[in-house]
Amino acid sequence: MADNKQFVHLHLHTDYSLLDGAIKIGPLAKRAAELNMPAVAITDHGNLYGALSFYHKMRAEGVKPIIGIEAYISRGSRHEKGGGDLQPGEKATNHIVLLAKDLTGYHNLVKLSSFAYIEGFWRKPRIDRELLARHSEGLIGLSACISGVPPSLLLRDKFDEAARASLEFEEILGKGNYYLEIQEHGLDAQKRIRKPLLELSKKTGIPLVATNDSHYLMDTDVKAHDTLLCIGTGKTINDPDRLTYGSPNYYFRSADEMWQTFGEEPDLLHRTLEISEKCDVVFPKSIDQVPLYPVPDSHTIESYFEKVSWDGFEERLRDIWQSLQSFWFTASACVEIS
Image (cartoon, rainbow, N blue to C red; front, side, top):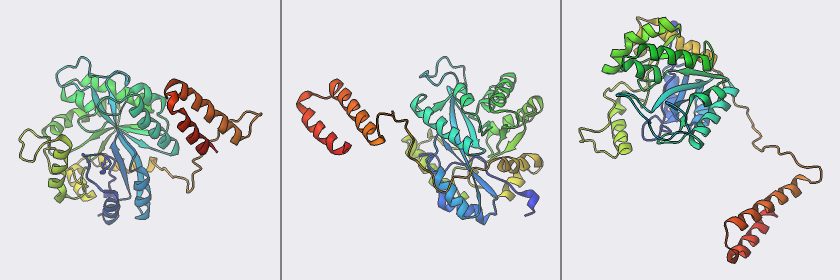
């Protein structure tokens, strides 16, 4: 394969996309090296559980790791629970892929994924536009699959709204940091929005990039992944109404296969390399994980730790615990604090 026909996977789910992704990180790293992939991204649903393992195993195989997530983004505020008044075909929660350009971007991914659980959880850990704007530095955004905001609007024939949403995300992330994704797994919905996506890119000036939304490693893993979806949804393999992806093409495709699919539009594939070059997260070899707390002049760090520990103990003893049990709690606290 010629160097100019390389490709970088920017949308990929490992088995840390629980009960949805079926790619194990170790075999993925070896397969990426075998296919001479220059880089690969991890974009699990709403979490960074696999990021550190992915980072080290990819580097060990000589493949550049790109750290990201496929975040759930709420239609309105993340603080609002429930779908609200939805139009036919409208979703309360959409997807957006976020990739870290640098360590600042990685730290913002950590904040976004944490706040999504702490403040935005409703069925899924959700962010919103306000939170994304607050923690947008160092990030690249992709419009995601057909569950992304612009694609889902195009599926409902709302082209102007899709254009406004795309420009809004570009404004939040900064010009040059937002791309429209185009995917081809053989789904009718993807075929339906292919031309509108091209038109949307021309109208907004936001570039298109080809992705594959990989959920399993090899094409032979499709049945195993189908079974995984049944486990996740509480269905059996014989249930005609069960969730299915409707295509056998969600595996980790080679660059040759991606060029066979999108080769008539080479810029869509070249942009995967362009985005890869923008992303360069390097974790420090050793990270001091112990935070520094300001200590009043009248205390050493040891005496201040003891003070705040006992202050908290007394508050909880007064508010929560029954006095009959206080002796045992006090004895335990003495041991732990000392």
